[in-house]
Every structure is written in structure tokens, then in C-alpha cells.
Image 1 (cartoon, rainbow, N blue to C red):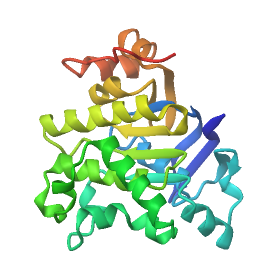
Image 2 (cartoon, one colour):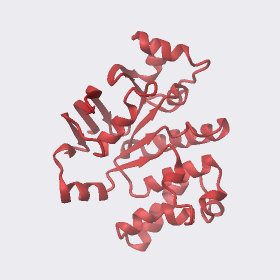
Image 3 (cartoon, helix red, strand yellow):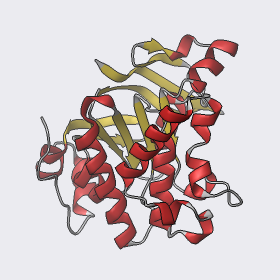
Length: 260
């Protein structure tokens, strides 16, 4: 089953076409990276999935639900269901600076009114998935490094067990060491959760996407110009734009255990 299906999505702002006929599939258990330069429309794709950007054409289905048809109360109920969770580029946007990290992570469980035992189990699983211990989560966000805050933000998204995790530039604001730890956490999450979760990772950092994604989608001026297995795209790009992106990266690490 596909976790996400975009069919012929078109988005326009003030007469300018930001996305032009974008069609994309993300299978359950798959990690798909979307790469392109600034202004290519990457973040707009994320906003359409979350229904915070209006489409002028096309359809969006998440885990079989046509979310383009949802309005009012139905749309609010779908958002509260947690089927899709979003991780911001800057984790300080999703972690309240005056609230302990553990309380921010558990907020979605309280809103959904999970029984105490189930909430504790889900919280422990999410923390284990991103490698955060009790000492770190008892602090305020300012007491964590950038990479630790980003892993906390990912844990916050995971506690409600979404079908689709959308990450928008999840490592671009981090130093090299923190970036590597977050990438490794996402790879471990992919390997452990299998078909339980799909990830759409949006980034201009093709090197990081090469390390974590199963498939790579290349976006240029609102149009998909290449879509294929990550290893094939980074080693034998077919489109001239993709080749220019690859050539701009000194060293790209492709996944060592990339799944078909």
C-alpha cells in the first residue's frame, strides 16, 4: 500500500506556478528523498501534503485517504489523527523553550488521551528510536545540542505512530557531527520500523539524502525531472540538472544496504 500518492499536483502563488503537475508515490516502509535547489518547490510539496498550501489541480492521498476532499471538521479530525507528522528544519519551532523536552515529546499523547500505560510504552519506543536518554529529556531545549534537539523533535513526531513522516531540511542547520547522528538515527528508524512508517525527506543536501533514502526524486522549477533508486540516481544520473547537482557535491555516500 502507498503511504502517499500525489497525482498531477499544481500550486500557484500570485500567478506564478510553484508546482507543475507533480506526481509522486511513497510506499509503506520507504524513505523517499526530494532534492533540488532553493526555490525548486520542495517545501511546497510538504505543505500540500499537510494541506497548508492550496492546490489548483491534482489530488493527494495519504494511506488511502483523499485529503484534498477534506474540509472543516473532517480536515481537523484528520490532522489530529496523527497520520502525518512534520519535522521542521529548526527544532526550536516545535519544542517549547519553557517546557521540558520529555513533556514536549509526550504532548501528542496527552492530546489524544492515550491511557497511561500505552503512553509510557510509546514514549519509551520513540526515545529509544532516536537514542535519547533520561538525562537529556529532563532538560529544557536550551540544554541540548542542535542535533539532540532535532532527534527530540523526531521523537515527538513518532510517539503518535504516524503512517507518514515528513522532514523538511532536517539536518541543514546542524554541524557535521550532529548531522551524521541525525542521519544515522533516521536510517536506524527506517530499518527498525519497516513497513510501519514511510518517510518523505526534503533537502538541498543530496549527500545526506544519499545516505538515508531508498529513492531519490529530483525537483527543478516545480517539476520532477528524475525519480529512481538512490544508488542509480547518484551514480548514473540521467537528467542534466541531476548531473549538475551530483557534480556540485565533493563526496556522496550511497546507502550500503539500500532496499529495492
